[in-house]
Image 1 (tube, rainbow, N blue to C red):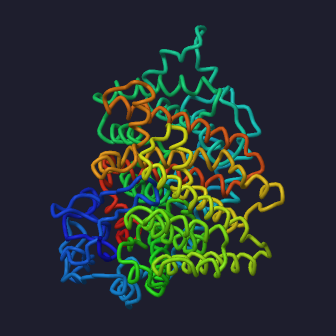
Image 2 (cartoon, rainbow, N blue to C red):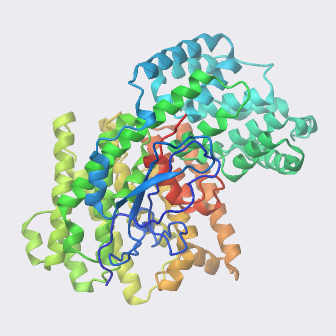
Length: 615
């Protein structure tokens, strides 16, 4: 049985990004090997995929928070470090987060930020008369992570450009207009690209030399919904031309194209994209210095907010004391919080992130009861029945370790329901309780499959995997925590069955998890993954063929997901965005080894929570 671990395991190594010469280095992250490799995300489902490798006796289980030396400069590519502050556990992290510390990025008293916000607001509104200029500025603002400040202005611009016909727009403008309108929930038809087709219905050969136009078309094509064949032809055409042109492009443009081919914007995590793009934008000729300065100040301010949130979550987790009693359970509040920032990047959702992180942390413990602890089937049946009853009397039949977990789940869920009732007047316990029951029954089904030596088919495996991944649980909780557009009609669409929006996002999550952890699961003797089930059902003998098949399924699910954005149904835009962000976060987290900028989940954590941007 594994013993309780610390919050993270990291040793001091090279800076999180060799290109980030002006960033302080605060190493923090998840489990690493003695060779200081990336996190090894394990297990067979998403939030559950957070590492299980707990070992409190390992001397490397520390967080090394290196403070900048007072005499350091920011001109060198690798910053000199003062003596490190060692954080060994959650309590040490709390002390770090609460210490009075003033860094260079905190000198700003907020006045400059407010002035820059007003300057940007005026510039944005002045640009309305020039559609391309307005769209480009709005796109830059969104990529820099500043859009939440300008929601009203952005909607005015989008309403303006969606109501007009632009017969003379070029390929770059058409692609940009389509992408921004659809991304932000406005209606637009892909027929705007028909004028770029020849008489045979193919894209004009004359477009092959228009790299910026092709790049814009490529990015737009990833928002294609089912039945929008022109966008999938656009994807094939633009990708082929961009790949063939790469060797002849100048360095800065080649980097842009390479990053787009690696991961299109539509599938990127919002806060990570902001961090990456701030650096890219600073190197662009003709960038707006006021906008760049605002982005840096705002990024650091939001990072400070995340540290406050993390402090509250860590304190709650420590007081809950689950891992002290259940030594086999994962002690990972930081990783849980990383997922919540992926799902809800806007600062205004601070309280939602905190409550969601609590539910994910408890989910991991319950998963460990069913899996790592290898609970006896009769005890698992008792636990499942107790969750179904949802009362304290049902808890009395449980063994001691299950009682502790049951109480944590019962109290935390009821507290969340109380907060929602107090704030909005909604009684949501039946809905939250139902999602937990569904998930526990999903765990029970997996346990029976494993215990009986039964192999499910691919559809059974994936659908149950969406439930046990916590996708439905997380999105139902967020629906009420966000509180936007909660009506009788939208609540009816929420469950039984869960909406297709949730299912598509959860399936993408489930499949990306398998792509990221299949080898480890196979070595551990877990249930067959979707890769191997796909291979079996399609008579494929090599794993690479199975992985390609799963990637095709994921791309088809993105079409379904985009269709939900187009149709909207009665779901509020905020929960639609959260579902999309779940799909984005799953790809970014489980495909991190292919990320040429951040390169590891360790670096995601450092960049998001502990490394401010220094001018």
